[in-house]
Length: 79
Image 1 (cartoon, rainbow, N blue to C red):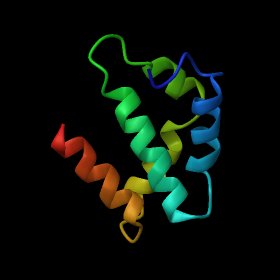
Image 2 (cartoon, one colour):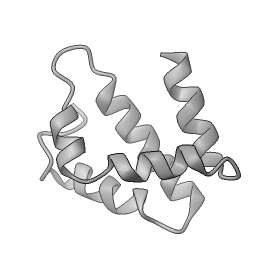
Image 3 (cartoon, rainbow, N blue to C red):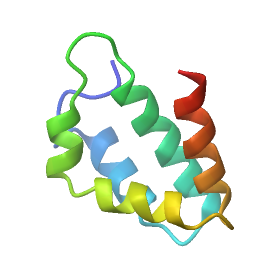
């Protein structure tokens, strides 16, 4: 189980990491959220949206110079 909801410590930790200045931490958080949103039964899409993460994901997609952007693009292509 990756999370019990948007207030689970692992969810909160990764929400903080996604806004980190460290690319490695951003990648770690992106991997977590990618796995979280890839569950077959009822992925917590509303929790991720409610946590304000979608604009951050869009930032990564817009910034082609970051490895996070490349990871995000590749991870969803592989699904």
